[in-house]
Length: 137
Image 1 (cartoon, rainbow, N blue to C red):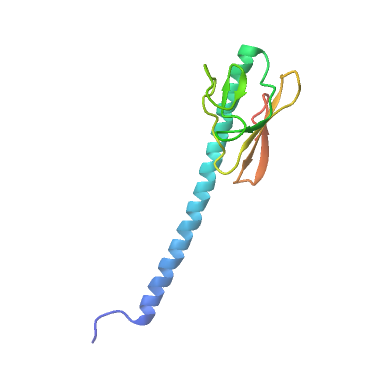
Image 2: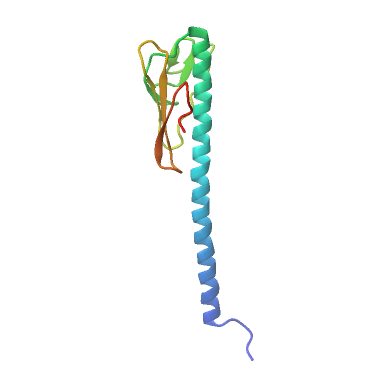
């Protein structure tokens, strides 16, 4: 009797390994989507906290609109509202960028008493809006 594996046995083992690797890649991609969504929710909460600190100091929210995050319209939140960079005494020195896109800030009235932060969650594939009254999700 010869010792060793037959061709059929080797092909079955290779097929099983291929199936397991495919399943692990799919699971890893789902974990990445959930991770990016968790980061987005954390970023939005931090931005909202900085906006509330601004509101407590100025009795209004910044009356600007645009895209938030490093390299976009605004990079920090300071005593003068949104700025490109270098905010002295900043409420938020660096506004985080969305992992695969951009956060959008829109003021809802010229009085500065309301705002909307727009963001997208990959897991639900929907757009959400955070306002002073609600987190938007």
